[in-house]
Image (cartoon, rainbow, N blue to C red):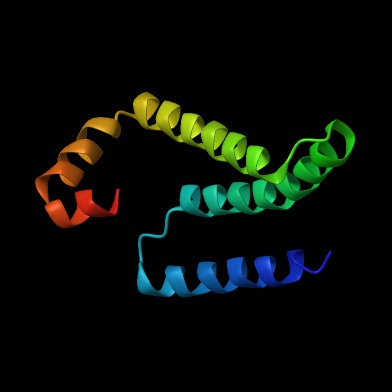
Length: 100
């Protein structure tokens, strides 16, 4: 219940500062941040419902949440064509690859 006000405040500040720093402000980034905030707000309720009603342990919930999120990111990267440049950039530097 207390999470939305700080998240919305952060989004407003992010938008105001980014529009001043970057003159060619892109609204698609704002849309993605809004989508991430909405997803973040919903996932807690969904996970709590699944753990209470189906008796799923918390470590299993974390595993499947990350697995599904990883699949979404992989599909998005494949659909937009960003997987190739991302892999090339990450393998070009060992400092980046070590974090993966």
